[in-house]
Image (cartoon, rainbow, N blue to C red; front, side, top):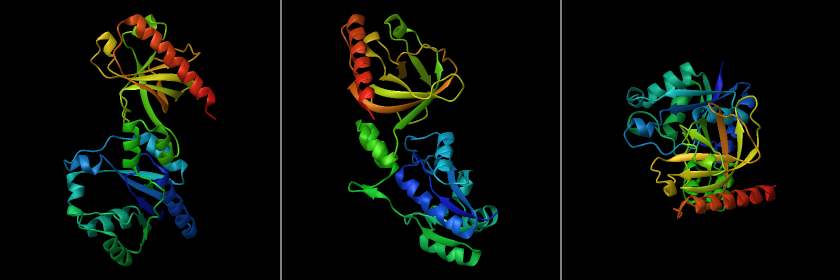
Length: 298
């Protein structure tokens, strides 16, 4: 089936991406075709040896968000050195025209494609004229600080500016992982925690955060309040990076469950305390501060 194809990495599916999806959705509806997102995995920079930036979203979450913001389907094209060696003409003919049946292709004005990034928007437009699709320049959305971008979101996460993160993404930054067994130090202090393993998304700087937590299965409430610690726990001579969440007023068996944690407010940085009593007192203060902040949040 024919489609309007919108191409990009779409990590974070931020407000700039959302504006492009609105544009692509309108173009697809006007033509009576599907709205299809084409993205790549692994990240092209990783395959080409430049190193990929930290992820804002997992592939599953990215797909979920893209569908929620107007796409009919998402194609995660495997990116390889072989694909990187394709000429712009082969990319346009074999992938866009033949396989995806593109009637229109929406890309940013800085879009580059084909071997050594030889193709640009002008070339895409020329190729489309012969292959039967229209090249459409994507709208740029932003605010007085500048365009919304994944880089801008990452910078804000790194500095702990979580209001800026929400401004760019249109929602809080989220972490996800499966609850695994830890060493139960939190339980002995009266604050049991859910330890998240294999978190793929970009972590904020080491410290303590007010969070809301949801699950992806039955029996896990969708908006539990809590306090999260990201760090190595220097007071107990920890060396391994951990993501630990203490949930308020919940006694659930979460081992093996996948949780999604919305990172809402930075409470303090990580520091070493004089002993477990001092640590316990600070955890209590952190929990109280997180409760107060969450209670005041609309």
